[in-house]
Image (cartoon, rainbow, N blue to C red; front, top):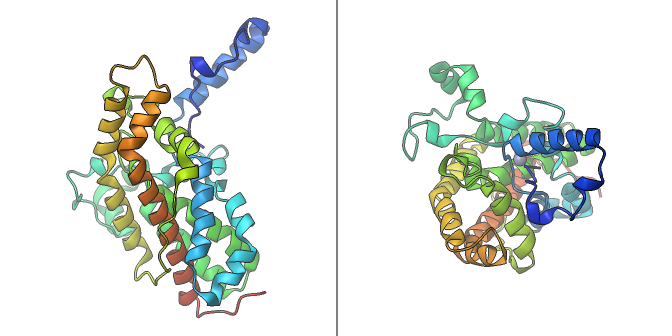
Length: 294
Ligand SMILES: [Zn+2]
């Protein structure tokens, strides 16, 4: 989950007045903590949608197993964001600040993790985000789980992998300006990743493709973040323009914002679902096509 930023319009009238001073202080601290937490993900609805759709991309050999476990995959689509509350190292696995590595296509950054660490140091690489390598790592874990025929682990790793693949399809996960905070548009992540999706997701159509084998899971993850990164400036600009002449981020703002970026959201969520299916399929192929339980 990313920051559900408290907005004045969402607050029930008179709520604060009814609270004791200690409760008010505690509430303010909690609000501050929430507000201070940086954005890290599509919202829960987007992640659930991606894992749900991904099942439909699979070939017959593995489709029945995933279909039978579809609700599990959907229910666990947001586990990695929940893990952030317990593990301070989790957050860095959900993004990569590509724009810290020069200009698109960021050729200064080696895609090999060892080479990247050698060049920039481990601290810097972790701080500026691990997302593509995390996709590679969980792909390998899923492959091992398939090999071991550990079906519980397969289900969980598949759900988690879908989460990180979806993050890789979120332009705001590829830039330092992930919440619009560097351009005076703080709260952008909440507007783009959560509210926009929640308002318009009933219109989203899945542009389905058949799952295909991915040659190199980490390299493909770099392709995903590089592609989504190309939309970052457009999204940030559209957010600013949509607010022009309006008193706040009201319904008109969301209608305007959606007309500018809605097609990107649908394309990226479809891409995330198609890629998630391909990652699941690839892990199964690389594990030697084990027979799945029915
Ligand atoms: Zn995430």
